[in-house]
Image (cartoon, rainbow, N blue to C red; front, side, top):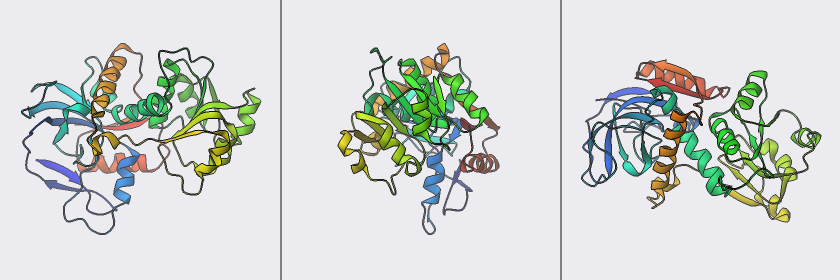
Length: 329
């Protein structure tokens, strides 16, 4: 079968790979769609030297179950599924992928492949941020709570806005262009501020003194002093990116809770909570089909091949995308 991988930090190569046989709780899925994520770029750039075996990236997948392991409980051959994957295993840039059923869900029935496959990784990341790291109860009355989402127009921000809005919070998103402002407002942001300008002044000008929850979805360092100033005492700051210059101890006097989010932790360490990800994705499928959740796909390449992987990667690597980039087989 065909696969697309990287052997260094410069680019992709096409190669042949044997079709694998699933065991245990694994599914073998015939890939029909993938989405490109910043983690793909970061992983490739992190390669030093030359790999002997190509690394297969890709952490969003959609396809049909081709075969199943002996211990699979929730799926059968022929099921349409979608998932975000496991960072420790080969990803979705291949014709067939092995994936643990616990981090897989039945694909939406009424939503297209391209709209569906754009969503797993970003939805899992946003869900774990909001409901596990920030400990927000979506069933509670959250109208008095405010969340600031820095980089609201990106992949994770675009779904975090929707989930926070559905949970009843007052949502402030950052966006820097007219198109991005329009985008985040359409997704449910109550207020929008420009992250290229003084966030403290903008938020105080809105009549808001401090903020219960802040999510950092881009480089935190340029905004660190603003985050420290704006977060409410006993509030929570969570991020998916690194702190290279900023010091977490700056949050100490406000007794601020701090949390990292990395979507792959549960599968990397084979935690029992892996199955939570399958459950989140089943809810996502229902949300997409019912219209409660809107797909954030904004660009689709047709044809699962090396050329389109390169083109889609260049778009994401440029750092100016609104929403998600998808390749449909």
